[in-house]
Length: 472
Ligand code: NBP
Image 1 (cartoon, rainbow, N blue to C red):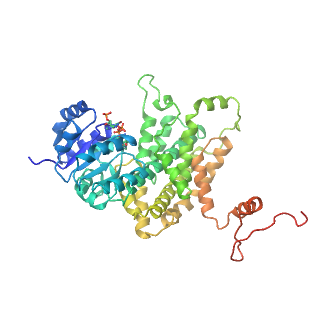
Image 2 (cartoon, helix red, strand yellow):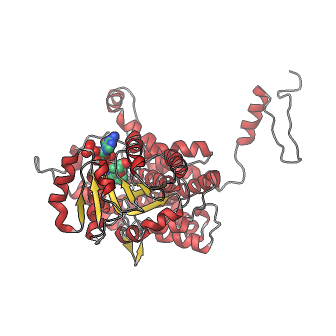
């Protein structure tokens, strides 16, 4: 038999499932792991699923592959990726392809693409979304780097990816670190989406006074409308899950400290570097930080007071309003994410296609949602649109939902329930739609204390003034 061209190193959960997905689709694949015993155990267990071939040392792994080799690296992001690259490069031929499928920081990917190109090795930084289930049954795949490198693996990637309406959830994203950048923003949007759902839950529980079973029903109902998405679907299932030890709702036993692996923080950091207001994702990151200081919160809960009022309005209306707040805030979060990707593309010289990005996020990934079809339509209608909120479909949706969105915030504020992502999204909407903002005062203050100068509304030029009453 001819040697395979495709290999994968890093057989933890993501690597194992991706390798099985490749083999199940009939593509021969050689697998490798630093700890060799794991490779043999893996092939013993899953070898019957398709053409999976084990290797031992890294030398044996590379020798079992025919050039041009395509080697997917699925190890922990950061230094391990560089260590694996350094161990592989001396064994490779010019024209071979390395693919980093982990959650690497895009600036690391930019560096690796350049340094490996100088050695004749192609490098694709490839975002893979969908967690372990997606990796096995069809992820959303976001490859960035040299397009000629992508062409080598395109048949495999488009086959193993999730398929929606016959379209694979994989497309070439662009040069350099763009694939990992787009995956990073995907994860950032995921943070925002999850925070928004959590805020809706808080209000349904603590304002509307619903039980977990009732909350599950609300999310099930929402999942049949505009909010139809994987995250809403799993949220309903979470509220239906019973703890086997106690027989009570399992979610009530989960400690309220949110973890994170850093991609949301990276998205926010990049938005600050680019000067793009990405408030939804950033509030979601801050909310996780706040959740993590549980001990401080517990102590403060005995010291700081709130309004101490209960909701007295119509519960059905409140539930409808919360749905509107969730939908409108979600539009804002996605609009901001797409603005950020555009700004990064301009900064780094990538040619991104936002409609195609929305298309490949429709399946396989955590933020998959009906809503993404509308984003694709908006970019099909007007590829130059500067902010998705301006697209007729989303403009109409924001107009339709904003009364409920505003009432939700009033209720939350009156009851002292924190809704940072709902409220920052509304503030962004209200600021973005305003011709005038009070930044004239900020400019005046800057000029007052620092002679930073200002521009005028009535004539061209740069001005500096002596501020204060004429008598001073
Ligand atoms: P982990 O991120 O837990 O990494 C474990 C793998 O890395 C093992 O195969 C381990 O080998 C290998 N490894 C390490 Br650690 N250091 C190494 C080194 N210096 N040299 C060689 N191999 C090394 O695996 P994962 O959870 O499958 O995730 C893989 C990538 O996919 C990560 O970047 C992750 O962020 C990303 N991702 C994960 C998910 C998810 O749901 N888990 C979703 C999407 C993306 P060993 O067996 O010898 O220790």
